[in-house]
Image 1 (cartoon, rainbow, N blue to C red):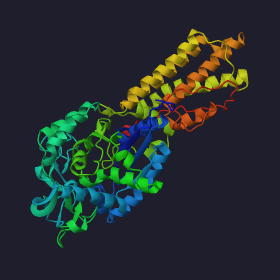
Image 2: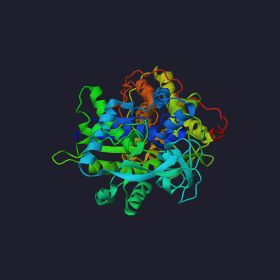
Image 3: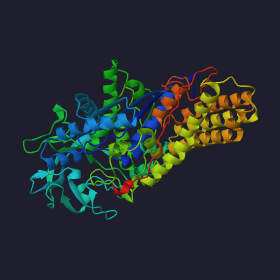
Image 4: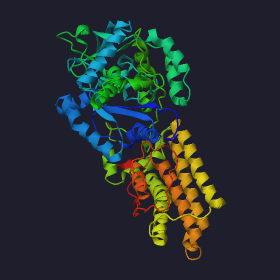
Length: 566
């Protein structure tokens, strides 16, 4: 994939999970979806594809209202407190959103209404009278996450009313054993209330046919989704008795003086990918620009989430998109892939904002350079299995690989060129077999990495970048330019010229993972620091180029207490 390819640029939507505004992100969140999404987006931007990467603060999640109730403030105050912190952490870590917004915007409300109305008009949403839990002490209905209890499937004692974090099963609060209110601890009682339901069984066969046609999805994602659908979908309530959230479309509102209704967050939040795309288009000055990612069947969409969000993105969101189709109008694109990651654990405990397991990202960024943290996390991404995180492993990866292999390679080659050729790229002599072989090897690793990145195999792709670097280090050790500089200037010139070409390729290989360093090295090599659109092809460092003055790309980390104890 290169800028010179004749194929037109692809449109790639990178849709990233929306964090709750109830606390700062920890490394589990970052490794779970935000860093993988950014690596993938940067790769495609370098290749010249048109990427739209969107997300935002989930303002209506139950954790926000729980925190607001605990503090005695309005939910909007919690959102406005944490949203700037999200922007800070993305900027510091280099997470390159095209738009990071919130679900509190007028635009999000209008887009949610559009989808709600379309599903209702097509017969996939209807009202039902149902029983929901009511807290007799607080005298209010309890949304799903305001109820906790024992999971009927696995016996986990802190299961939420909508889903068990332990086994991943979706739940209804009524299913819980020994349920309790998060408000008062009281035992809730069922009471009748009227709500809108999405009639999922009507879309089951169409959804199943689509899921069975998926190729390249991770096994734990597609197998879970297929199993869930084959067990039989049920009608699910999509409104709740709440005063915080997206209101119902005025003409469909069923609120009463005794029971105010809101569209429930599990239905509304995933619509944020579409509403954020439309908001980005409006801000860009071309309100129809979003259509290239949502209505063109050739466009691609990748949803980066954690495994607890598989049902919402691999089952429920596709049903909305299928059900909202209107005769005469092109359908909205279904997900190309949902590369959900597993969990990052800390001494076996799942990282959790609410339970205080794992330090916040901003805490880590006070101790690590952003590229160091990005690299170390990328080596342990939980793509297929849970990954237990120990800070000494991060330190080992940074010091033993990033600093010793890559950073040291760049510095010693540029330093030798400065010492022997006044910092100017020398004119090479005739390349021998070793010279040609190392350049072919770097190019081969770049091609293998590109193939893996296309498949969202980000850990394995990074190994290709590191392997290329190790091969270049071995080449230098074999050719010994520090020795030939005393006896054979032409050979030294050829070796350093070759090494600089190889470094250019390695820098490209590391660019999606370590973007700050990649921009620096690119500038040192006389290239534009902005790699977007340059193509996934090693760029030549022309003889006669004056190189930048090198300085350490990374710093060696002194081991500290294990992150899991924080």
